[in-house]
Length: 232
Length: 267
Image 1 (cartoon, chains in turn green, blue):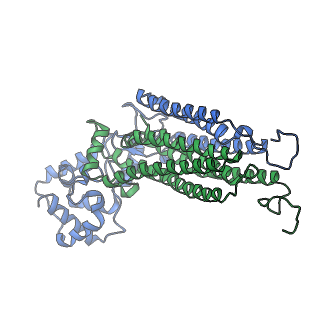
Image 2 (cartoon, chains in turn orange, brown):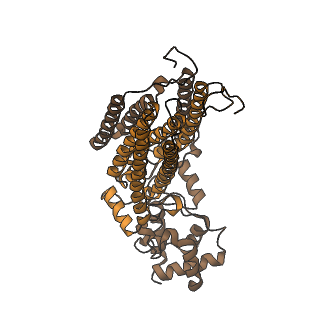
Image 3 (cartoon, each protein chain N blue to C red):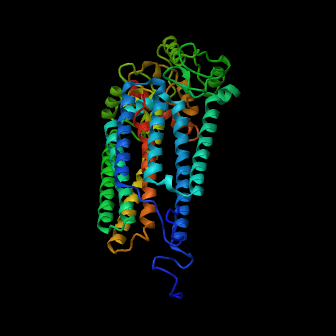
């Protein structure tokens, strides 16, 4: 260290004080989250436009999803948000063991979310409910489709526009799932750092910022769940 | 932020009591059940607004408590709310454009829903709320659509194409066939047609493409008409038939038609 009196180890040399460093990190994190929100907003606008064009296809499409799985995953993500918030709290009060445990729990919930998602995806792919030009229901898929729409169904058009619904479904949940995977990686990184004792009452910025990211992933899902699974 | 007046040196973050987090979690899970319950009541037109309202309440809780927005600096709060406002403008502007476009230009309309024989919401020419049988479709637009697709569309009903085909079939009896090589057509069918019309020619029960096997009106048309449909595609009824003119040569189109006639038309 060039300046012996500069301060604690975690304080980078271009900051005067830990407080300044913390505030700057938080601002940077909010900038990143704003960018994430704007990024997802493009997908949400696409969703609303397609839903307004093809309301029937979106209604049928949502009945082809299992809302129980969506609801279960919503609860799982809410729990993970809670444990992430508790991990930050534990770090703030300097409880290293609890921080590690809450990070582990968050990872477990995130993994459960991905497992449920895997079963949903596997089934959709199996019966041919694929996006865009790949949409080609198998016989099992046709049975599900007939069940979802009832006996009144006899047209090609609505089934045709289901490809738009599944395009939106796979892109939105896919990108969201990618964020969940990244989150798991970040939590693991934090868990390792925490185990090495890098966090303290004075320095918990990475835990705080990662938790912010994680809550945003939860927020996106809070909207995705009713919009994709719960259409009348 | 500096609640303790000792110094500005150390980090002074707000530490939320555990019971607040537990309470917020409980409310969030309650709202999740509420949104599922609202869905099961079948609110109809209110489905979307209610879902958005509940999701926004949940989002507000997550942002305020889990993300500590309540204790953030004023600048970060303003920045975040500004972002939300921008998203709101993006959404409202896009939707007001989409929903009212048909009022401005009837030819930018035309997202024709083959199942109901009506135009998709907001896209029907001269109609703001397309819905119900009384939705009248401007004959000029139909004519334009028909000219585009080389097909005749009956006034808002999906039967035009079909009726024309049946007439031709009935009048002609055993009509003249344009010759083609069905063997060569088989490979072309595998390559260019099978994705939508399926290996058995049913178009997956008419869902992804025309059903040649069970829908007699399809192959009752003349070869010349069918070749035009293959070449130029069909817009209007059902899944659009993409034009194959740039993809297949005239000879290949005759071959594949001959294959379809043999395999699915029983000729």
